[in-house]
Length: 251
Image: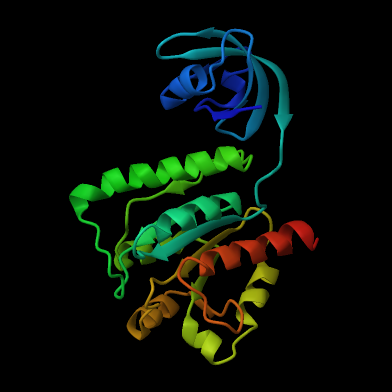
């Protein structure tokens, strides 16, 4: 059954689900649904409703909820991935696959070794595209939450944002080179359901020594994701996979 996110909470959509925006075109023109067709709506507070379409207009789809479900498909901890801006479409890959693996939020940031520099006047349009990728990946992977993608941060902004997190990890390749293998596993053991984790990964050239010093000064734990050096697009996916295994399969 095709899935669509709505902005209302369950309590505001008990008797009628309203779908607007680009999804209206997808329902009527791409999927060619009509009155009586069925779809799944996901509320902003994570509930799913199996619905039957009552009416389709040019700007709105109205559907009647027939069955409500609390799915429980989200990670028990909230994981934010902060990625040093990489080249090409690697960030799109990170957002798409990271969404499938359960990330709650993505923060691109301008790292010292980032070759790509996004100008301020282009940041909003880029972020809108990244957010659309996250939405589509959330629908495809049966998520009940769409991860939020923020406009690119500076290091200063990222350090300020980090103050509110339960745990802050820095993927630092020098840790892998030195054979450090315990920090990541030890950090996961400290976490409880609903805790928040911020994981910082660098661009292609990695995190500089100067940046690493700044992050560790602000309470980040330098961590290795195994003995091998991972690509910029692989490291966040490794971390999310390990967190999923630890919290969802191992327990």
